[in-house]
Amino acid sequence: MEHQQEEGGSQWLGFWRLIELGIRDPDELDRLIAEMSESALVDFYWTYEEAAADLKTEEFTKYLIPPRTEDFVDDVALWIVAKGLAYYESIMTNPSAMPPDLPPGARLSPWTGTVARVYRSRYRAPVRFPDDPPPLEGSDGTGSEASQT
Image 1: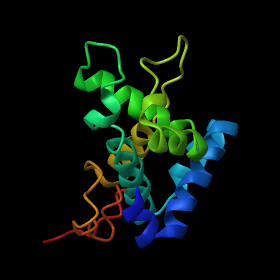
Image 2: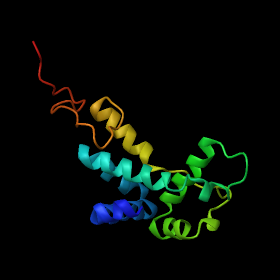
Image 3: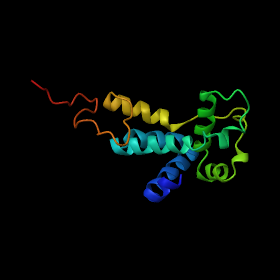
Image 4: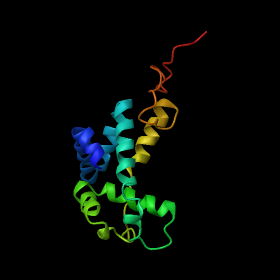
């Protein structure tokens, strides 16, 4: 994702450091996600989704076994991102290395689901788009919202 690397290189590398942590210690990444700020949740979620989206073009999906359903393509792309930066870049630079299917016993652990659960629990809404305004202060789902009378 050249545009992200150019616009936010440290954010891009920070994202991949978190993915590498999740490979080594999934429980620790779960804990860190639960503690992320609202903006960090949004950044992590959409960086993950955009990295996976780069793998969903015909250039890559033509190597997948049929039927290439949307869910199947999503699962493979999210799995590749979850394998870390080195694997992701190996596919991005050589589309023919795209795995035709998920390996037997592949653990599907897209952290986007964890982020979405944390965000919904905290803000009572789906993860916002990066350009949308953040939720109002105090709307964190803790009951600390100010009463409007």
